[in-house]
Length: 415
Image (tube, rainbow, N blue to C red):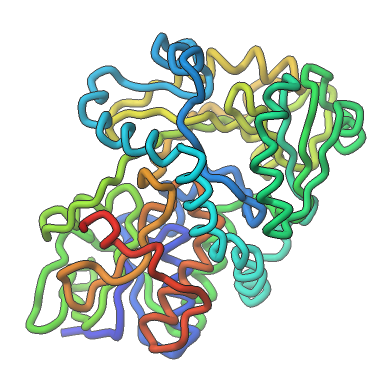
């Protein structure tokens, strides 16, 4: 019977980073996934390492914004009617966490993770030879009205307090950074300290290769086969059963499939999102990610072309794709930037695993000896993968954690 010090379930960016951080500390680790490394939720992100993130997402402000979503006229959000009864309690909790006092509390709780996010990626990218995918030229968020920009004032005040650099720009100033943008917006904010990736999947695979070079093993297997074996855990793999005293659950949106039968029921829901790749007309340059806040989409240069990502869709994780948001946002995207024809024929769909307070769960699993959780990273799985790995590794090996892990404990939902 094969045995190892720890098993990491889930080979997305979070799980792969955890496995690498543990291997760096001399542990014997197996990384297990049913598919390839980084090929599920981690594949389709925007490639932004958001060290400058200040405020988490908030519930739509005002009746008009809510009605626009409810009438399915918004490009920034969509939902399936059949899913509303299931997601309604989560939405109520999310709305409660969108009050100014609560959203600032959650921003402060998350800040230690974001403050270390870029530095932890830098270490792993250097060690894994992945720096060729790295860009250090920030990202930009656009605002189509002065009112939308003015609503950003609390965020900018908190950014100043946190020491996060930014530049508030008019449209002409934004055009100096990205000359190909059309002047359909009024204001912009440039966040220069953000780093971005031209191929997030390649970076995850580079981390996995570094993990292998340190003696780590990556295996195919179904996490749902995990069960108690003596005082530890056993999981079935294509290479046979594997025993371990410690297991880390980093399954993203699939975590409830494993945890709920074990009695761990946490308020996770899914913000599904889509992307497509496009060519550009007349070879229009784009050098960094650009977010159109009013319509909830992002365009960013990737090796595959210009990646256009949608906002959130509230639907069952495994429901059939309904990429209707593209129909609503494409006219707006094309009036901003010269998107050309499709660069591929695929529409990618992933599910962001989110808790209503926009904090991840990182730490011990309640009531399950030898189990650790690293789930619910919402929009920031790529950003927080390596720093989550460091925090989990420090907790597991008895090191002093670089920050207080209490704000990310699962128990906050179980009291």
